[in-house]
Image 1: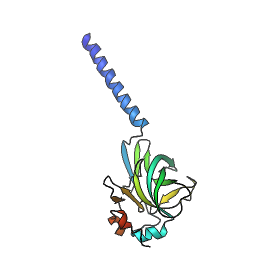
Image 2: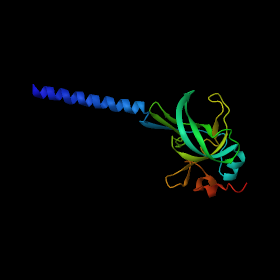
Image 3: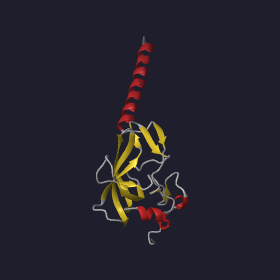
Image 4: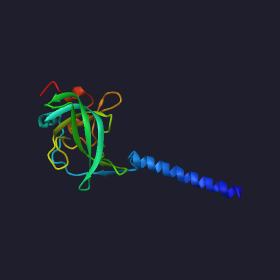
Length: 182
């Protein structure tokens, strides 16, 4: 009798533990798997000068918040970004919205060419153009989907996105972006 009671307690404890973990994973939107997508870029970039010439806005940003959404079976992430430093263009405000392809939606992380979207608390230098489309009003997108995104690592060095080519794949610091020239 005591053994049966102990077995019931062990089984109920295990079920409760699994339910709590499931609730935490679901509530915090922790990715359980990653789906990498790819596609043709409308325009690709391989040089810093090409990025600078094509950008409407170049800024160092800090991601204050992000939220993923699904539009026509494609996951996007809307980031609220605080402009820390402006290198080109005019931002009407210190806060801008950036729309990136991918993100964590329904406990699945969607990446584009193995590039994760920026997350809350992350700092980056981004080369942006105004977004024109049905998802958002008054937002920017990163040039070349991910070519114009350079995230800061814990040592303060810049890291270009995956799958970049040419000069932009060698960027390691702000000096490599040549903001003092063209």
